[in-house]
Length: 356
Image 1 (cartoon, one colour):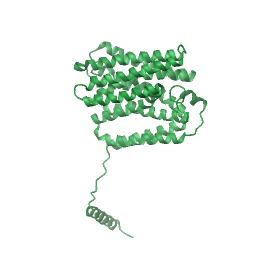
Image 2: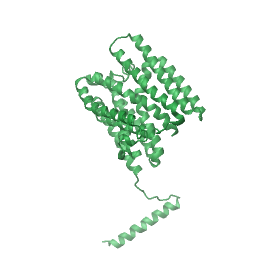
Image 3: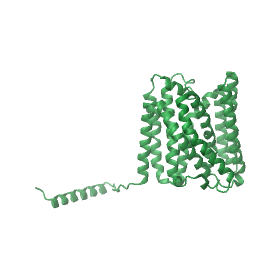
Image 4: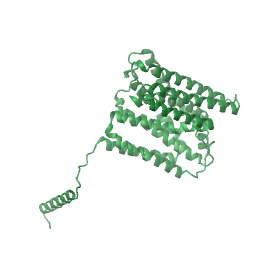
């Protein structure tokens, strides 16, 4: 029998010889220190993996569930974040903010009118195509105007680059306005991931490396969903979902169930950023009240309007669930129209975050 003292001494000798051999090869032993970045990476990867599995298992019900559960909270979090990031006084950037707010109101109202006249069959298909083309061109022109107002004084190269991108987008819109709109639907969740990366650079730089590694799992999950449902037959419920703007009518090859699964997964990534990521990164979960933001602190009218909007969102969540139960197609059309508002409203925030 070997005594415990001799066993301890043998382990110490083996450990010291191992350390000496590592030093001889030029390898330095570094102690593993558990940090918040490790916890963030584990949680983020868990969300990506679980979301991809659920989106692939039940695409229809997963999409409905995340919209009902996270649609309202994510809108509130996004509103709270935008109000906290905008300055309390606009100063020399007043033209940029006036153009931003006016463009959001104009584009959203015209979007609602376009959906109404299209769904009520009051115009022909050719007229609807022209109206959609015109709306998309106005949207591109508005983005270009924001870019010029934001960068014209100090970054002429960015203005030239954005003009070139606007020309390419305008050309793509002329070729297929429907394809341009579908691209906005699928690319919109990526804006939240980009904003979160900008916020981490500002508040939690130690998380950036872990976040970039987690982002690599997103295209892998999308590829997995495409492979999973490449030849899946479409059921009746999924057919109702994909008839409302996911691109089935434009693509002859992909399975509609696959498109719904990919859309649900990307939308869940967007919700995860705004419901979990942003409040933790900015520590805003401890300052959740809107009136605590600098923009609303001394403006009672804007504060009342923001609180009214939050109240409408709170009432709309149970009504949304009831609508999905009674009439999925109409409710999803209504939700897509409402969702377009914060899609448009995110763009001024992106231009502001680029330089702030």
